[in-house]
Structures are given as structure tokens and as C-alpha cells.
Image (cartoon, rainbow, N blue to C red; front, side):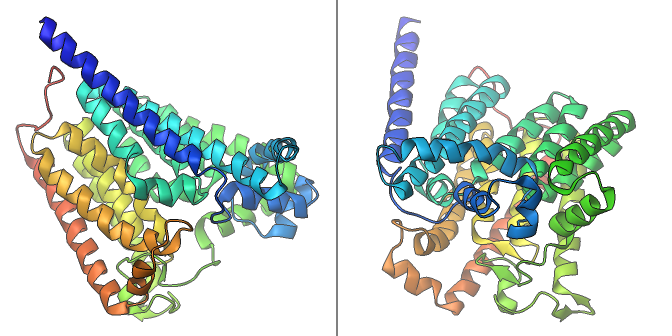
Length: 415
């Protein structure tokens, strides 16, 4: 008994050391120039609009939700304060990365708490380290200057609320995320289908009503109380979004082989590629909802998330290279909760490699000339697409197998 306690203490301190090391690494890079990330872009836009919200969308043609510039405006003051001690550009990187590293810490904490409750303590340690110590995940999100870790926080909260059958909280979580960025619209059909299967019509209706009121009041800050102007903006932002009407925007997705820079209005079997991609993503949501509904537990929801989130990267046109990052969240959950963890570990490793192929050629500081040359090779790009297709088919087959299997494969929490 004493030996077990001693081992637990050793594991704990190793865990603390590695987590600390991951954040020391982040802090060393906090002032390094990188991509003009989401927050810096928003701060620049707010500056162009002289911080008057009523002019914001007119002057910037931004496609973010109204909560994003509202939450970002105070960061301008933070940058001005930090710039007293350094140049303005460096101050911008410090504030931008600082808030993104904070999101990394919050997401790591939530991963730990969820896996601790649903699986085990050792599994929780491992899950956090799989997230924090993967340099490709870090390079593609908080170092690059993207708010993907914030979106993953909302994804995890919606996951947790669904497991705990807090259906109204699920709808509100997804809705609030859409007020910031439209990312979670990719997984919205999954939640709606699940709530319909659960016959939670009341919660769905109340959630939509609350969100509609919040959307309307926040949007009034930018558009006034003209309802039609608000509706037009959200349809344009969330559904039409013609900023990048291409087969792919850096992603090695299904449509890359048709020509990355070709318009997604290209007809395939009588319909546009954009329509096909949207339909395939909806079918992925439908399949995932049905697979989850079979067992309604941690594992089935992890598989469902994996199918939808990797599908979000792989199936629609206009997919950005970094969208692959979201599928790592359910992959991590599956690695630490399946008895045959090594199989999901292989998927995690291969997915990291296909992701690194893009990120190591694009992200400043992490750029490697060798990978830049590889990225320019379309034949190799097509091979990566086929590898990603193989990954996705394995993910779907495993989700099918688990949903139809009588005996689950989740580890005992005592392990």
C-alpha cells in the first residue's frame, strides 16, 4: 500500500514537471513574431473602426460573431500598457499569446477534470500530456495566434454537458461559441439530432429562444435594432461565407485532389463540390449521433466527436489546414480510455504526422525548408489526402464496431 502511494507521488511530480516544462517552452516563445492571429487581427480591425462597434463590420467585413470584438476590445488597453516596457509589436505578441496560453491552461485543466471523473487519475495525467506536449498542436494554435484552444474549450464543455444530460447547457454552450466564431456550426447538427432523438424538445426550444434574444441584443450594438440587417449578417457569416470559395484552404482534405485553388462551384456528379461537402458533413453528424445514441457513454461520445471533427476537416470544401487540430481532442480521450489504447495511439501518431506536414511548412519559427519543399509537391499532397482518407475510414469503422458491440472497452476507473 505504501509502495502504491509512493508511486502515485512520483507520477504526480513527473506530471507537474512536464506540464511546467510545456508552459516554460510557451513562455520562451511568447515574443517571437508569428502569424497575425485572431486576437491581433481583431485589435487591428477595432483600431481601423476607431473602436466604434457600429462601424466595425462595415469597415472590416469581418466574419466573426459580435461577442469576439466586444471581448477583444479591452486587450487594446492591455497592449498599450505592456508597450510602456517594450515596443508596440512585441507588446501585441505578449498580450495575444498570453491570453492564448491561458486558454491552453484552461483546456488542459478541463481535460484533466473530465478524464479524472469519467476514467481514472492516471488516464487524466496522460490526457493532459498528450495535449500539452504535442508541439504540432501548440504550433498550430496558440503559437500561430489562433483561438482554436478556446473553441476546443467550448467543444469539451458541450461534450461534458451532454454526458451529464444537461441538454439546455449543451445548446447554450454551442450558441455562445457561435457568438464568438462560427467554428462549432460544424458540430451543431450532431447536438440537434441527439436532442431530437432524446425528445428534449422543451430544452431545445428554450435554448434557441434564449440564444435568439442574446444574439439580437448583442448584434444591436453593431447593427442597431434592425432585425433584417442582423439576419442578413448571420446568414452571410455562418452559412454563405464566400471569403474562400475554394476546394481547400491549405487542408489536405477530400477535395484537394480536384485542385486546391479551384472554385468549389465545380460540378461533381451534377452538384457543386461545396454542396457535396456540406451534405457529407451532415451525414457524418447524423451517423455520429446515431452511434452515440446506441450507448450514450464516454466512449461512444468520443467516437462520435472523432467522426464529426475529423469530418469537419476532411469532408467540406473551404477547409483550412489547421482544422485538423479539433479531432485530437476525442483522439486523446480514446487513447486514455480504450483497453486497446495502442490502436488509437497509432491513429494519433499518423494524424500528428499528416498535420505536421502542413504546420511545419507554414507556421513561422517552426518552418522547415524541407517541409516547405514537400508542401509544394502536389503528388505528395495527394498521398497525404489518401492517408487522411484511410484514417477517417478507420475512425468510422471503429465507431461502428463499438456502437454495435455488446461489451464496452472502457478501462476500469481503478486502473
